[in-house]
Length: 201
Image (cartoon, rainbow, N blue to C red):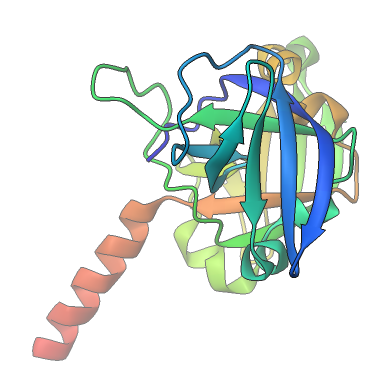
C-alpha cells in the first residue's frame, strides 16, 4: 500500500531482458537506506518487488503482464521514474490509498500553462475507467496522488503545481506521453457492494 506521495525520482541505470521479463536497475536521487529484499516499491505507480540492492541502487523485475498494462515497457536506460516505498504504520498519508495496481494507461492530450506557473493537463481516459473518475476525486498518475479537476467519458484534467513539477517526473511530460492510471479503489468497493445489493433485491 502506498500514499501517492512521491519520495524521490530515480534513473534507470541498467535494463536486462530475462525470459520475457525486464529487470531494471534503478538509482534513486535520495538514497533508500532501509531496503531489504522482498520490499515493495512503487515505480511510476507500479508495485514491484526489490530483488537486489546496493548502497546506491536496487533491482526490480516487471513480468510480461505488467509490461503490457503499464508504461514500464517504454522505459530505457536513462529514463527517470517516480519512486515511493510502501507505507509504514507511523507515517502520515498525505495523498490517498494507492495499491500500485495500474488500471490502464492514458495519453497526455494537452498541456497548458495555468496560473502561478502550474500546468493544466488533459489526459485521455480508457472507457472502462470513466465511471471511477469524478471531479475533485483522487486519481493515481505515475504513482502521484492527484485531484481530478474535470472529467468526461473520454478524458479528464488535472493540475501539476510547480512543486510537483520540481520533485517528480512531470517536468519531462509532453503531449503524446503515456501515463499509468490507478483509479481510487473506494469507487470499486462501492460498485461491488451496490451490485451485490441490487442482485439480492
